[in-house]
View 1 (cartoon, rainbow, N blue to C red):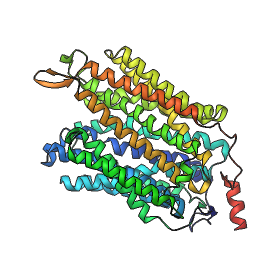
View 2: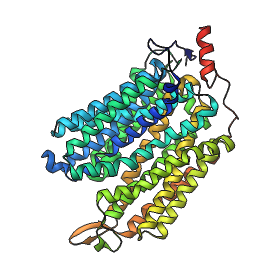
View 3: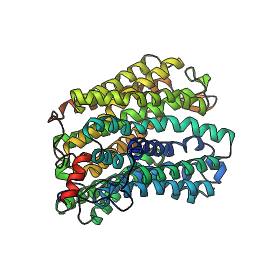
View 4: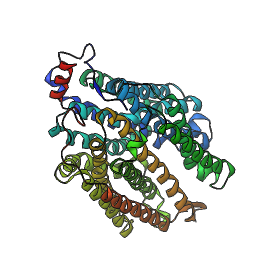
Length: 496
């Protein structure tokens, strides 16, 4: 990889006011929350979309699958593009694609257009890693930890806010209104980033790895398509087996190509370092453990009372049950940053994973009363705050300044894969533990408890993985090597 070089500010970025600098973190955090909201808003619509669009339930499910696939493919690709061509530029483009997709959803009821639009919205998955990289380049070390922790927590905050808000709009207004609202918010986010965020000066010039991008895209599509459709098509069906076989072959060839390319899309030699590679493994495991909480809680509280355990809540009430977890993530992100500053991010990650496991212990102990369900879900959200806040800090301390966006993009990709696997595994567990209630097969309480136990075990494995990550080397390297403050930024530009 080439050495990162300072790039002068683009025209129009000079003459900044203190207000614009103070708004950099809130504007980037707004973009992260908006991305999570956009991924969540379609959930309340899924049961009604076959009727609204005149399509099958299988076709409607692609509105979720398309976003998952495009987000997984584009996150590392846009991260690498940000390192090469400018992080603010690529970030603005990602949010613009997300907003364009929302406008398309607002204007059409054609399922083909809706699936295409949701695929465009998947580009927003790169918002968090790009924003974290900008924060590293722009903020002094004393402000960086808290800002990165907040940015990483926006995933949970936005998800907790998006579900009840979307459910309220869908319940009391035409469903297209929801997408008009998100279009307006998206336009506001794009304008805010253009106005308040200046372009990062740290670039890693070179030629974009097109072949590596195509190989990664093919491998991820085969993997995630197999994982997401396995329950519907049958895990032993020829199509699923062929997809998994293709995944192994494509990724094997892609790995070989990346090691032999001078400027690869993903620096596998960097990934092979224990501090980076183990952080990615911990991200996958944490993503699995976190996502099971949202999946199972939503189904559990909406189950009919006739099951003996369900509460029969509406989708709006279900969203409100998850809301305390989102508020907790917002309030505790500064705490996680202070723990990382005092004890190191690997300790914060281990503590977070242990708290997630504790949350599932609460869920197993009592999943009948609403207050204990909310308590357990909030404890899991608390652990997720610590874990998700620590992961980007681990990456920032372990990779060169010119590769922060691409490295964090890979880390977010691992979380996404963990969430996809969690969804498939939880669905498989619940399908195998059902009983007939009113003539309809519904998951049993034992099935839910097994899902909780499995997620708790995965969280403990994530905790053990975090403890094996080599210890922090201390404060981040001096500006210009592995970190860059705003003062060093100006000095570098003066000497350039």
